[in-house]
View (cartoon, rainbow, N blue to C red):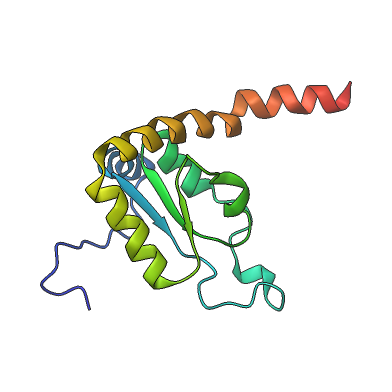
Length: 130
């Protein structure tokens, strides 16, 4: 289906190569759970979304399905959430056509990603244990 389009599929790449892809990407799509009834099959929906956080840390603006843990990660002003393919297309086009908005979201995504850093995790864990 990708024939004739500037699309590459990178399967089982090293983490270093994956980080390079993240650095090059302007927008990060995530659709785990698309077409799934979240109430009936919650295991088929992204529970956390580490790949989304990694892309955000590199400045990629997340455009993610409005399901599961992605709702918690991608907040207003950090990226976009969608419920239909039409919304995915519309929100992606809006980011492409508005570089100022994309830049603002990119900076917010980097900042938001730090909420999920190892240091932040350790600090929160220490607070809970105390």
